[in-house]
Image (cartoon, rainbow, N blue to C red; front, side, top):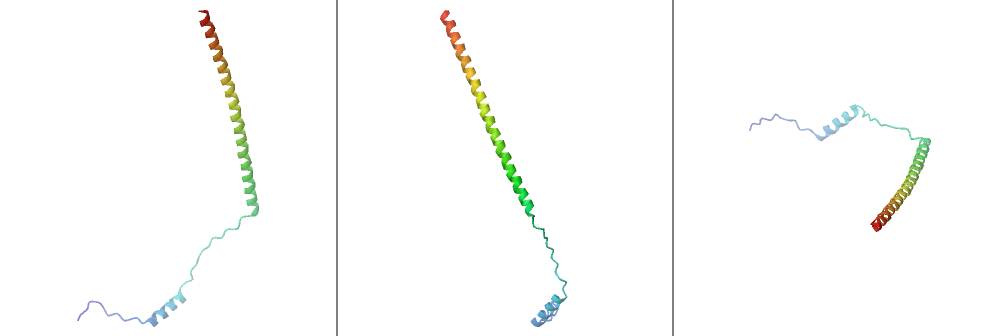
Length: 102
């Protein structure tokens, strides 16, 4: 019986534990970096809240101005329609008079 594989010495479980404990003792310590940021100041939260409140009021103001613009446009459009209607009625009455004369 000839085998091409070289002879390997069996490893005993006791030596595995001894070697691993020895390696753990001689291993360099593991370094871990942690990023720590300072907590936000309460003044920043208060300032952000004031800014948000101010933006809400600005948004409300723009909405009110838009409402007034729509109301103004509606009034102007109504007056234009009324003038056009009156002009049409006047033209129809003139045409009716002219046709009556002929």
